[in-house]
Amino acid sequence: MKKKLYRFKWMFLMCLTSIVVTSCSDWLDVKPKTEEEAESLFSTEEGFKSALSGVYIALCQPNLYGRELTYGMVGVLGQEWKSGSSLDNSSSAYAKLIKYSDLDKSTVKPMIDAVWNDSYRTIANVNTLIEYTDLKRDVLLGNNYEIIRGEALALRAFIHFDLLRLYAPYNFTEAAKVSIPYVKEPRPVVTPQSKPFKVIEYILEDLNAALELLKKDPIYTGQDVTGLDNGYLANRNFHLNYYAVCGLKARVCLYAGKMDAALVAAKEVIASQNDKGLFAWVNPDDLTTTYNNLRDRTFSSEHLFAFNATKLEEYIKSYFRETTSPLKSRVALTEVDDYRNYLYQDNGGAAKVFSKFWQLESQYVPGQGLVRPKRDRVPAIRISEMYYIAAECLKMTNATEALALLNKVRAHRGLVNLTNTDPIAVQKAILDEYNQDLLGEGQIYFYHKRMGTKKIAKANAVYVLAMPDDEIDLGQRD
Figure 1 (tube, rainbow, N blue to C red):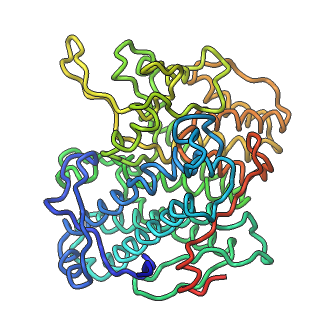
Figure 2 (figure 1 turned 90 degrees about the vertical axis):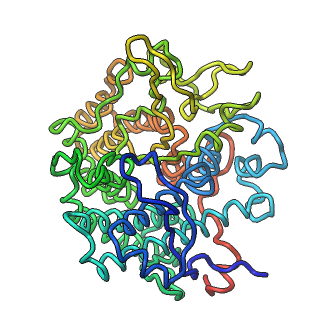
């Protein structure tokens, strides 16, 4: 039986038990619900919260940001890894991906198709949530209408943006061919494809609407939410909060060549760090501590937004932890004083294993007792990227300021200042930082696509993946 287009499915995610009340690390299991049950789900505020939680859970699955859109498929396409058991087997999907070969064959295509299908299925759920925020607005108390709807609009933009970066050419002219559909309708209809520039317009419309709504976000207002709403408004960096949306806007505008807008958005986030003390630089002591299990491997204080992937230990173990041949990064650290050296550790006979995603257990610390490490986090947007975006936007007009922004990050990585203000040198320094800071986070491949890199490492890069055959046939796609 032919696969159905996920976008045509009418369903929603509902928690099996009560809504999370204390921490985003307590996301609950979900199951699909029918249209009739959606009416019941959205009849209470708790239903809205569980539905939004369900969207984040879906995005944490291995076909999406739990693996393939971070260190997995997109990391391999970005040539982030040079070896490892999943690459060394010549018949494996990753071995094909790293050579950009046989992308339409059965070894690789199911993985590429799953990203498309699961992304649009999640978008359908987001669209249902957005629709009901208006239909059932009366059940949302306090600022929860603005916060839930704002997050949902941002999620729709977030998912579509990565679909655009994967399945559409890098061409924002009127002459470009149509690319992906930007789906806003929860009903089972075929949404027409749009040209890339139009998709960017839709993304920015959603992001700007989200930013206006999220001016009620406590991370923006500074409201003390301790004890409010049973803890629902805590841990905002596990949600697309106001500043995460602002950071996403900076990323989108940079990709689309809207440099002025990208700079404004990036600088707003940077100002929140300088003026409000948000997104603090990682404490070096949390990296160099001799309590190995307690190292802050993802630099969690720097996350504007991170996925709370509670099954990450299961997802990564055969790639980084419980394997004699883990993925090895292609670009090695060259500066010995770089704090990021502490992310490369020997393990199980393998040397210099990348440990960012290791999931370790609690450790006893004298005077503190049993301490739980900062784990179950997949970084999606971080503060350092805002400095890189701002630096790139300024490299031609104010190279001194651009270099100062890069040096600010370098100082918090234990490194000395750079002095060469030549724009080419500045851009090379930005790439060096992408290769180190964002390794495993799904951004390096898209950097190269944006820069038009013909070869990444030694392979001729392929930057447009094919949509599923069913999408082409049933949706009558070009």
